[in-house]
Length: 264
Image 1 (spheres, one colour):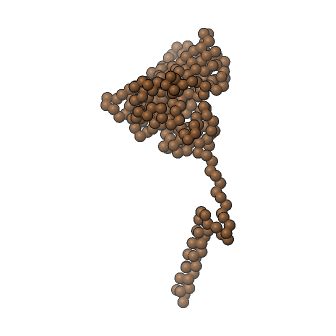
Image 2 (cartoon, helix red, strand yellow):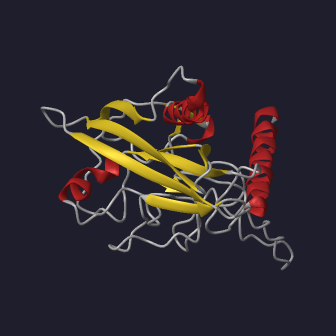
Image 3 (spheres, rainbow, N blue to C red):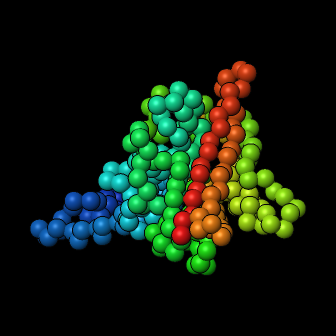
């Protein structure tokens, strides 16, 4: 008798547990009343934190700022056509331009003759859409560097990885008159050494070249490049980076150039 009673008690406990599970299951109802709907989660792009497969997220859904938003391609530089890599009609750019590209916050800059973002970016001093230096007489361009990209504008370019990288311009100098160039070099070097892996988003900007072929769409945080106007009313700064690919033998080099102009 004791054993039979024990078996019955266990059976009742199991039945009660199954009933609780069924009541908690999605779509279940009790007494004909539907369960309360779950709250709608925050949108992935624009929540201010890196989510899976995002290359940036500045906490909003505005276009033309630090993290561009294009319908269907939110929070991604490479797939929404905003990366600067030179004229894609050039064979050199078509085949290697995806290894290193730039993004500049400059929403009113017209495209180049090929219809892609121009490597020549101009900004008028004190224009708040493109000048992020409050001091008059100097433009502060907000720039992002992106490496080994699946660039929608370069479908023929295979991101084959980066084995080595060199900043060719600007170069640091001990001359007092080169203080701004030294600051630009330091900003660019720091950006390249602190990249974000969209496949492992929670670590932030911690990666640096070399990048293997599978390490794609690594971008830096935005950094500011200063361009002083000087006495002639306008000035230019040029950023030049040489990269060597990972896969070919001998290594193939690609030179990526960004030209910035500050006007009065």
